[in-house]
Image 1 (cartoon, one colour):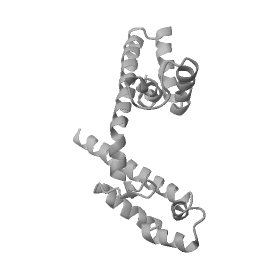
Image 2 (cartoon, helix red, strand yellow):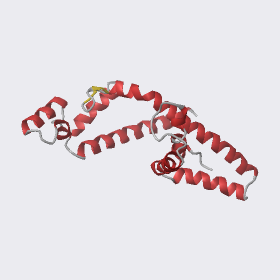
Image 3 (cartoon, rainbow, N blue to C red):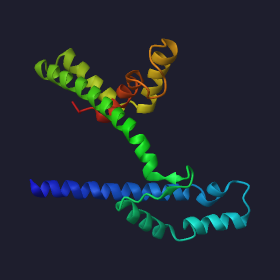
Length: 187
């Protein structure tokens, strides 16, 4: 069991490094960050200054290694777009993120367990097929599309729920089901 756990942890670390590397490279190769930070009307001298100030004049691999080293230590640096520490930006939003994730998880569990039990009790019946269809639908439907459908139906047409914000429990009713597909348990 210890070997299995070790392999899973190693695999998770490799996935995290790979995803962070690819994301870092795509972010930096999709356009010149120095021009984006300096502004479209910036002079070449201003762009050069921004490159030097943020270390964007060094090779991408070196930039990634330095960024990853700081991130591992918990130092995410300052956001040049918001002009504040990234740690503060994450801290401001982590509470709502945890509530949203908990709502999605709770919805997924409250749906998956009864469906799984009913499907197990009645194998190869229309109930089993319906549970399978709901499970496949939840995993296959893109979250953003299902979320838009929920917004249009329950927020715009019926006006039952708010379409944005996080001020009350009503704000978390639509996002929970729209994210359940990412947490849906396989049949």
